[in-house]
Image 1: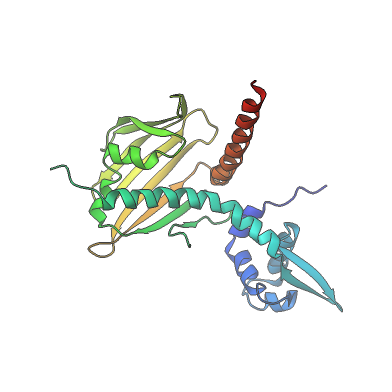
Image 2: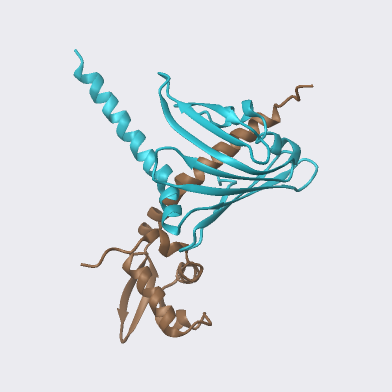
Length: 107
Length: 162
């Protein structure tokens, strides 16, 4: 059995993020997605495969074309997953800002 | 409400960049990283109290920070060495969580004035490997789960007694 891809790494790649942005509003065929990039078609296919394997994209067969659309539920899961790290820093910085706004120099 | 802190962590890389704009002049932003009492206040949270056991803010200096729970047990300790300490400009230091497998990270803090009353902090954090970075990135998520788990355990312990 294949190990499931790390969603976290999948979403950190700039090309894959661009693909997710493209299909965010409409489902698109592989060819149409690839035409948005200067990279070779097989490279784009590989990215699509990775995004599909970690369930960020869903495939639908339409005639002889495969269409890709975003899996909103999975996307939310990923956003939630990275969020605690950002939240931890944001809380810390908010606190720092509050303390320093009331700061009175010692001398 | 949108978080003011931005984090950029690219795939397969062993570093990340944390950026935050502050409603503070750059001098105050830097001071918050230079005065031990303020560092302790910032690092203290509702569950743990932070204390700097050692703090030498200068080149070749080092620091050690410990966090204790309500009963005074040390639950977290970290240390590092300071490589550069340029007031209102830059801090370069290492950071290591003691007794953990997360290794040592190199941190470059850049303090940038935006206007007279606002400033930006750019933090470049470099880890020993990409895998290690991802583990650290997942820590607060795991910690959140753990805290929830501990709370449940606590509640169960209390119900058992009587």
